[in-house]
Image 1 (cartoon, rainbow, N blue to C red):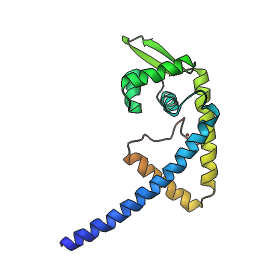
Image 2 (image 1 turned 180 degrees about the horizontal axis):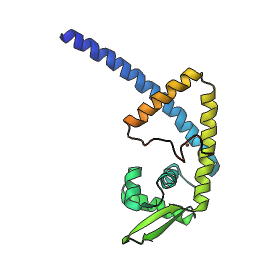
Image 3 (image 1 turned 135 degrees about the horizontal axis):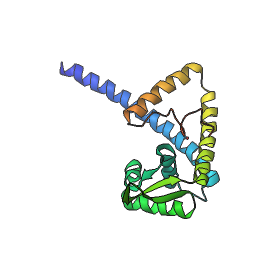
Image 4 (image 1 turned 90 degrees about the vertical axis):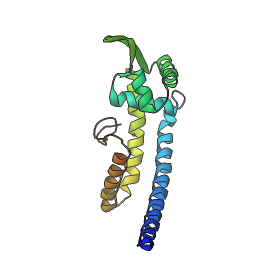
Length: 169
């Protein structure tokens, strides 16, 4: 019985290793696509700042503490990022009318345009990559990516700014 368990662990370990390797390789491609999509605005925003802008585009008006949690950073880091984006005219921070001790952040029109522009570029590039796959590979990719993002706790991407139907990832 112990031999069967060892064989099962080895097989699963090899499978896990192959999956991890494939996901790492795919993530390199996606990071490269993301970096290229930021190229047009890299003089205005950093990748972490852009993540904050996408979170605001996705969640709408957000408290600073909530934003820090969403980004996985401490509140002071989120505050510095927000200050820079505010100085650039890309977000607005206002006192929460329901709780005057809190501030709420939201994208400005210019901030939304930048998110739209970057996401449109990213969507086009991913679309051109996916178009080179067979229909069967695309179906398998959808199933695999849905399972992967669900396991990682990422919310479904069926509404802007992530949906493929959105003109502007």
